[in-house]
Amino acid sequence: MAYDPIQEDCLRLILGAMQRERIYPIENAPFIESCLQKYNRDPASLVATDRDRSFHLVTLATETIDYRLPFAQDDETADREAAEAEAQLREACELDPGNWDAKRMLAAVEAETNDAYVGYLIDHRAEVEADLERMVSSAHDVYAREFANGFGKRPYVRWLAAIAARALVAGQYRLALDAAEDCLAFAPDDPADVRLTAVLAMAKLECTRDDLRRFRQKHAAAYRSPTPARRRHHLAEKTSDAWELLAELAIAYHELDFAGATRALRSILQAYPHAAEALYFQAEFPDGVFGRVNVMPGSEDELVLAISEATPLLQEGLGAPDNAGLAVWIATHELVEGDLQESAKRQRAPHGARGVGGGGEN
Image 1 (cartoon, rainbow, N blue to C red):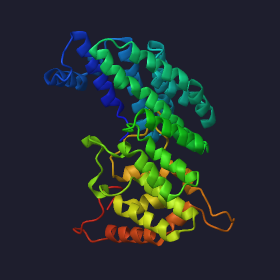
Image 2: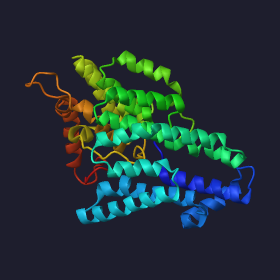
Image 3: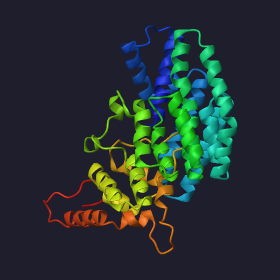
Image 4: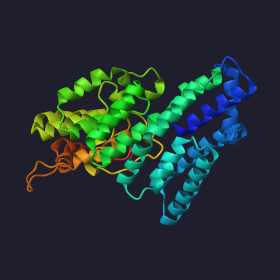
């Protein structure tokens, strides 16, 4: 799910090498394998142009901002790495003024507020789209067309996905849904998984569960994936994504259909490992700046990410001051408490008895 910046960097550099050496057809497996080995040894060996270097810097900055900074051990380390990543993004913008990923990420880092960042994304959306149209129309050889119709479209997709995700955080739910719909119209196969943001926005807009089903039917291509990398974990193969289940749960809760909310909660507990812990603690995770953070589909990490993105839903109450919010309803639900108790029993089991794997000491 989402985008893998390292994989994208590698494939972009391989395509560039093919263009320089006039390798054709571009599905040349031996050449691709040779380049993969070079990239694994030293990515810089494939960097030949300012555009290459610019996106490679984006990849390095992404690894820092999205995957290391959230787990920094101390403020000094975090500040040093953040400054280095920001410098990389500035250099990327200077090397390639058309690198909209770098510009978007730098704007995210520099923005004083989320609202300011949303404003930036909206103000420059037309420029990103116009640049893409120029790239596609000027692609006159097989390599340029391959780039324009593939990698060249991704920054615009990520731009729309960022509008949707950050508008949701800003409480601009209609804007979030509209941006997601625009993204799905442009890329029906949904490479950015923007449908996940869309269903959360729909829940905040008080859509019904029938509306969710119609959305899924309308965007059926987004729910089909021919690539193994996006297959669901075996534990979640026949269930909806956590985002959709959380949206269904929130809608049912808002409608006072507590039986329906409980069914959605049970589905989450059955679909994801260590789900009770994630549903109880409801940890918030920083939004990815390059795109949605890459996690294993069907994993506990995916559920943690979904719960974090669903924070606007979890903060809802029933209206009266003495009524608990949805977050508390979930955390204190008997299904969650029961699973937590069972997990605690397994952790206290005598040595030799198999406990719960991962996510803590047994």
